[in-house]
Structure formats: C-alpha cells, structure tokens
Length: 388
Image (cartoon, rainbow, N blue to C red; front, side, top):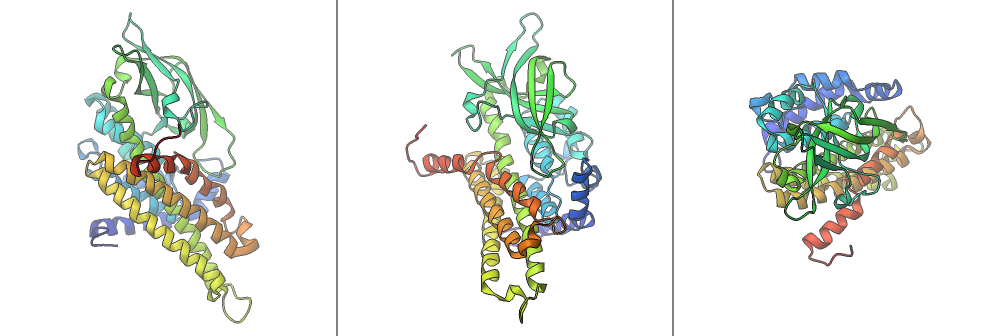
C-alpha cells in the first residue's frame, strides 16, 4: 500500500498498530464486553505508543499528523477484532474541534489528556426529535446577564461513552442578536456539572462503549465553556463531522476485514466434499466481491482523509460522506457473507461473527444514515432539487 496510495510511514504505522491489535485480539474484546468493562488496557497502551493523539498538534503532546493516520489506527485495531468507538469521538471529533477552534486555555486543558489517554471527551449532537435534521436541534444556550454564564437546556440521545468521558462537547444553539435566529454553538460540559444527567440506553449491540440519553436542565457553564467563536458555530461543527464520517468508515472497514478473515480461514479448511468449500465459486465469488468492495471503500476513505488534512473542508465533506456510505455498505455485506460462509457456525458465540451482525448495521445508520448521504450527493454533487 505504499507509493501513491500510502507512504512508507503509513505502511509502518499500519504494521505496528496491527501488531498491537493482535496482542489483544477479539477474545480480549469479547471478554471486556461480557464483563461489562472497558478496553482500558488497550486504550492505555495505544496512548503510550502515541496512537491516540496521532492527529493532534505536537505542541500539546500529539503526533502532529492527521485524520489519515488516525483512521489507520482505528482500521487496524478493528481488523484485529478490537474496534474502539471512542477513537471516533474523543481524538477525532472533539480533539479536532478544540485543536482548530478552541481557545489556548481549552487546548492546554484538553489536548494533552486526549493525546495521552488520561482524558476522554464525548460528543453530543443527536436529539430525540431532530434525528438527522440538525437544523431542528432544540438544545439552547442563553446568557445570564448578571454573571455572563451560559445556561444550557435540552436533551440528547444516542451519545457514546458519556460514563467514561470527562466531559461532553455539546452542540446547542444560541440566538443571533442581529437576526433573532438560532445558530449552532459548541460547549464543553464536564460530566459532574449540576443539572447534567445521563441514562444508559439498553442496546442490542455488543460493545464496551455504552449509549446514553442526556438531559441538560439549566446547566450553568462559565463563559469560557464556549468553544471558539460564537458566530462560527456551523464551520466548527462541520470541522468535527467530516472526521467523524471518515473515522466511521475506518471503523466499518476494520470490522469488515476481521469478519472476512474469519470466513476465509473457514473456507480454506472446511472440507465437506473433495476440496475445501472455498474451492466452490458459490463460496469464493461472494467473498471476492466483498473484498473488492472493502478495498474500494478504503480508497474513498483515504481520499477523504487526504482532502481533510490538506484543509479542503468542502472537498472533504463530499468525499467523507461517500466514504462512510461505501464503507458501511461494504461492512454489512462482508459480515453477512462471512456469517453465511460459516453456516450454522456463523451464529455461534465460538466464532464471534453473530455479534457483528448488529454492530455492522450501526455503520449504515450512524452518524448519518445512508439515505441522508444519498440526499447529500443528490443535491450537493449532482445538483438535483431538494424534497425537504
């Protein structure tokens, strides 16, 4: 993968992260989930090796690289059976937003901890009544004229890892004094802030990172809880959403590769007739097709990451959406074919593929559904009119 697609440094990073993932593997990940714990040991070792903060600025303890490098870390850990969802949230979304738009105080307070693994940050945008329509977000922030504090009120849903995050980066809205319209803004809300409560959602997805519903009841925040410029909220928001889509693609590709490898191992050795079942085209061709789809999705992910790291937010937006779509579709099909290849064994806990069925669907749904990506491409890329 070196040359035009990836540099020798990227290839070396892949190899070293893959080696780390192999030392832990799917058995470790599955045991953590079964015990109701978190991947603390893997997270700490990845941090020690410099992988968690590879995209964050060097002056704050990061690696000084970009989303392309961080996506390699997530993909390779996923391919080893250890997909770390908080890599999408903490360093990719929150770390990127704070590094690009945060004040010096916010950068000093958060980036070193995000890079060395001692701190985590969740990201709160989705709301019960807004779903994919971020323009309907009703979480609002208003100023207390007496103190200058912010008062934040609203609800969020399907927010990952709130219980293990030191704070949540909340997307709210404030009133524009000139137009009276609401505009998006981002706030850092520490987990123990009065008025900030969270309740776990009972999910049928086996993962160490849990999902939460948040309630913000007049949460009082100091003036410096606002990230960046009050008038640049939309720009700041999309600075985090593009990396989120790229990293979700990496998350999907890692799971797809792990599942395909299990299927290939089985197809090479499972012998019912004269030859192993992998010799039969009915088994071989769907696996080959799944592999092709994974490779094509990776190319789009690499394009999106390269555009983003080059500062082309517009180009990265289109490519990131396409990458997330392609990787999500490839992941679902790869997992489905892997399960089918193993037959009844594909549904046993021993082989571990059944748990991937629900997990793979997440990559089609979150952080934005495939239908909304098709809407985006329809009107933004193809110039077709909106229906909404």
